[in-house]
Image (cartoon, rainbow, N blue to C red; front, side, top):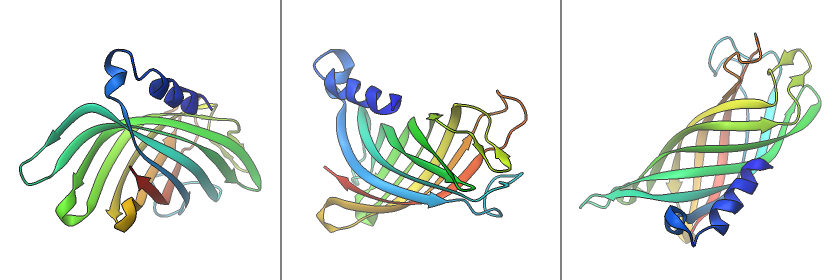
Length: 180
């Protein structure tokens, strides 16, 4: 919830200082699951799912090449549900990182790091740690007609042992977004 409030605050303060150059780039939905053998070691002890809505805001730092390639810094915020072992909790994330758009290939590559707040961190046999988690992600999207983008994202969530010995969760997520 805090991530969405921060996003609204950034957009709402568009008339002051650097925030006037922040623009809403896209809105979307995504969902994903973990694969026990397709994540970072040591792997998960439970099966997980995550579903959320997200917004992407572009920051004023961008570069465009003569060939049309665009490199831009962005902020991603999301809110949704995290499910595992028959339990469900709320998750909200806020990350920042670069985005590379290659119009001639109709591709968008991006990545980022940031944080998440979760309402539940014990799911069956797996203890994720605590309410604050670090997030790292990278993805690729394909631009379709009508300003739609479909993509895949690897999404790692972990507490980096700040709560002791606990396990993170790695998601393979599919997403659909509308770019303005």
